[in-house]
Amino acid sequence: MLENLLYVLIILLGFPVGLFLANLCKDEIKSWKKRLNLISLISLIFIIILLFLNFQFKKPIVITLLFIITTNLAIVLAKINN
Image 1 (tube, rainbow, N blue to C red):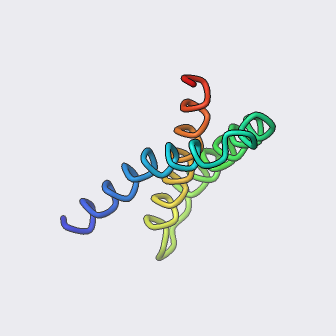
Image 2 (spheres, rainbow, N blue to C red):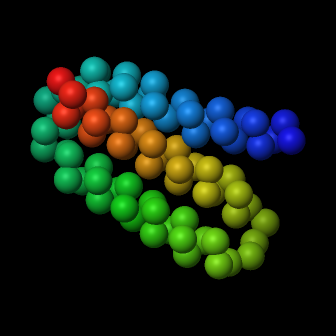
């Protein structure tokens, strides 16, 4: 149970990290917006593929990909709001 709570906290930390990165590099977000969305889409596709596979480290990899998705979407959404 504690492991699942840690995974949820890691995923939720994607939002403040994304906002921090959005404030840190405002100029680069303009040219990287499509790439960030593409990275998020590829991560989502990998998550869907991983759900059908069985191996030892499936859960941490899915959590990592969800962190990437939340961070990228927070960066893109922070740029839209500014």
